[in-house]
Image (cartoon, rainbow, N blue to C red; front, side):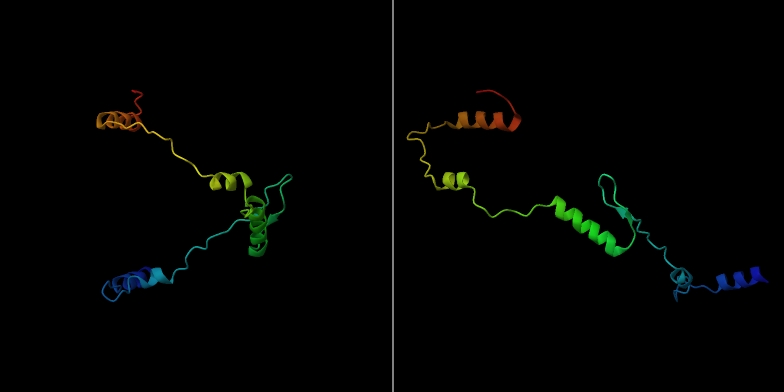
Length: 113
């Protein structure tokens, strides 16, 4: 009886009315497990299971790892930026051939001069 019932059920499933997908959709999807975590310290912290505890540990970790950017001015950098840089008086002009040779040295790592 059971086998006949199953055969009848299967034979009535149709692709056109999507009845073939209904049994699959009704099945419960597997639950994703979120394992417990603990603070990486010496000695290791206790295991936490709740979302709140995990969020607290993660927030604490981020506060230890990330340091806010300082807006304090670096006096050496400020002085260098304020210094007026003068180019040399006479720059040596390169010929096209010299320019091609120099650029190949940089591109291909050759050390011809």
